[in-house]
Image 1 (cartoon, helix red, strand yellow):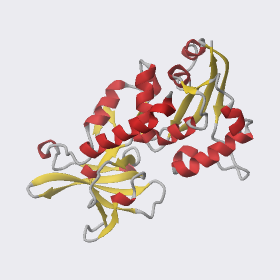
Image 2 (cartoon, helix red, strand yellow):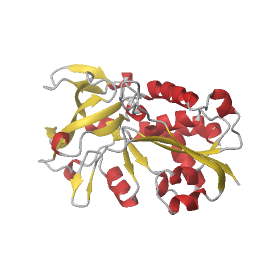
Image 3 (cartoon, rainbow, N blue to C red):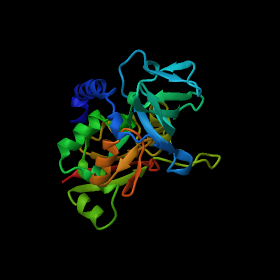
Image 4 (cartoon, helix red, strand yellow):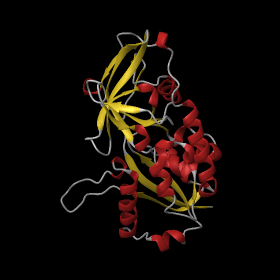
Length: 282
């Protein structure tokens, strides 16, 4: 089950990020006129810090003063609103203008090599249950998804149930044929003032408390969830991440560390969802 392998796979993922975090695209591949402006593009692009350096800093806009150390923000999603090239020791280097997705007052300029795109490979791209669970356990961008899965401690996360949340009929019906008592639960809701609750746009530590509360209101308190050992669950939770359902686009997104707009691809981050699919395997 997902929970049993979670700690080990997260450790592997952390080690991998530490080893790869400061690698840089070859300077010869970075055009001297490269730039990115989210205001005329697709909006800001989400990133995570992937460096283990104790001296990875965010600077003020004039790059004359260090104002934040990335070691203090290991779980923050950084929204890259602009990028530009600067010559450093004879090489082209990309720098990001960015801010915390959870606190816009935390912002500045930082070297692109400290960051990795927050990317989600959507369930429809997986062909095996184990590959899906491995990614779910290790992908940093899926932190909230893992936390929601843990709210159902005795239920297995199932690839087909997750896929069913991303497709329409008749494919949805085909994916659910192996289950009974199926039910999709939409978690986002309007509050008393008419505001829509985008839990996936919040810090996971805050969102999970509200999701727990929302599930309880819908009749799925912790005791009920604990008792659902005969159920599998599917998850559709994407927030502050680029999410891809085409392998070709996923490959390009991973190829370029910095945001790009090509003839056949552009980085974008406009997908948000928060729902669960329940089902009892036949």
